[in-house]
Image 1 (cartoon, rainbow over the protein chains, first blue to last red):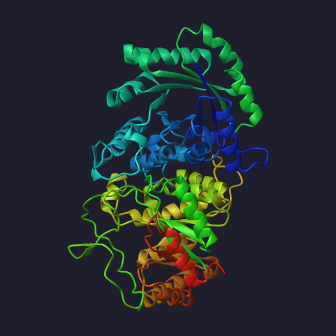
Image 2 (image 1 turned 135 degrees about the vertical axis):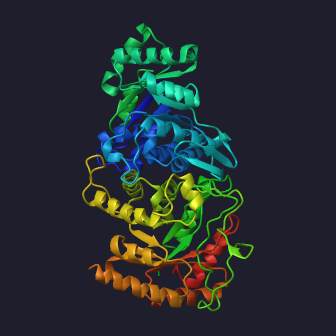
Image 3 (image 1 turned 60 degrees about the horizontal axis):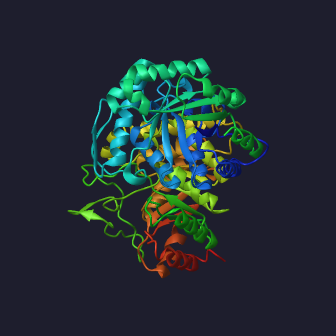
Length: 266
Length: 297
């Protein structure tokens, strides 16, 4: 089982944002952590943190091998093409290490685009993802969706290898997962984010109920607040469900000591 | 003398992060104030939209204009490669600023109507923190209806959305909701690109600067006078604003000082030059410009 870290991009102790990201990224990689997840749009708002994408771009430049993830993109808040370029650019800087986590929940009202009404956030996010996949993989991209359509669009750079970055879903309802699977197939990963033990088990049951046997091929990531890491680590062995990765979450950029304390649970 | 370079980082192997860093350091060492990066989200092989920018002022007589650098069937076209890439402009800014200490990075120009201003506010607060406030935001409304359609944004109302977006960004900076980073760095300068009556009105009413492109000195003087008058009507002070004259320069280097000096005499605070430098000889070109204008002295 892999061990990773997640955090909101908020510097503490008088350290500048850029210096804190570079230091923490290098330390996490040296400590052998498998992944670094940027907090999602939702956590950035709650924690009054900096932008996950720009933070992850700096983290990409401070590291060379650790997997990098956006953990909770609220795609319905963006133009699909704008977001496709931002994500492709991070991946370019990261040399193809980026993974994408989607949050299909309703966005905080404070982040809603004042000039764009969105009634069905799940539908808009799924439509946007379809458009983004076309822009990432087609030399002259075409897409015809309910909310976005284009023909012959040239979108460069593309993610490394002209691939769709591994796409994880934050644990969500059976209905939302069903809609995702109908549009895009099974997700690459399932993120039980800041979930307690019972919520984790319930969410993985949703995965099995909707996807059936295909659920076995979905990577399961369990993210817990850093204070709950010891208990979660101990609980893993007796869980009735498989977990592939355990992630400790902080509301700030970790100190070297905090990273070492997390890495000790590997 | 405030001289910026308009150039691009395209996400190619040739212009990799090491190139970006060296490009920025070379510009900084040679005395340039900033690098300004164009933005397009997507390109197309064919456009029905008309490319609106004027032909470039002549190097030998800037009151005359020269044939546009790229034309198809006699009509101007955006000067882009067949498979043109552009990195996300704010990520590129963060990257180059990390490799430099004084150089400013600007957008030339960001297509503001395509952005959710509430997310863009967070982006800008972040890039301001990462760069110690060395980012300027040129903003514009674009010209490609094809690009706007691909970005799910109504083309005909883009001007209104641009003005309202600037106002929303300003509001969020002055009185931030409690979802944004605390104590953000000062708001980037926001310079409205273009010289249409609507662009001038937006620049004077809600922005902190004006950024016209490829105007002859006489045209610049005329529009600058209009801009100043509209600032005055709005009760705003020209001294608090920033004006940069941008142009595509293709002439001989010995003609450049007089061209630049003319815009500065007419009230520009700075001049941005698009030279379309090649990866293999950009340092030589930068040095020639720096020497011609005495920037490194």
